[in-house]
Image (cartoon, one colour):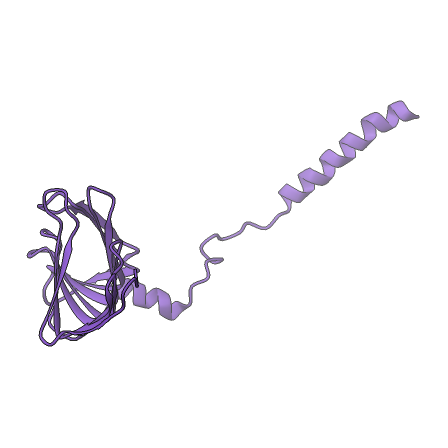
Length: 192
């Protein structure tokens, strides 16, 4: 009896599995994608890249990387790229770093610049945490300029300035911040 079960049970399992595959309905993998028809039509109309990443080196030898949540070419000027959720990292040879983030940016591929706008944040490994509404960044030289009010904190305390210039590192040095146009400083000894 057990000898017959050793033969019949595997055959029964084989029959059950074969019917599962023989009578299964074919699935359409495209039909299961979670896209609304409106979203598909919008993606077909507009060109763009999701999560682009560009990396290179400045003329001073610093490493620079630009990331965005999305990027779309400007239809009137193809050398301009409109980007959202932008982050630019500049890494110095000694390991120091400066990070620039914003809600949006326009990257000019001809001039190698990025104009960041909307809640621009600047953080550096030297201890600076800055906020502004607009910043122009030269990707080739690793320089940044803001001609609107900049406020934040640094190793020496809290401050506000009418403009700011960030110069990339040179000869193994980290970048430097220069604040102009009515600088207001609250000096806080030992605030780093």
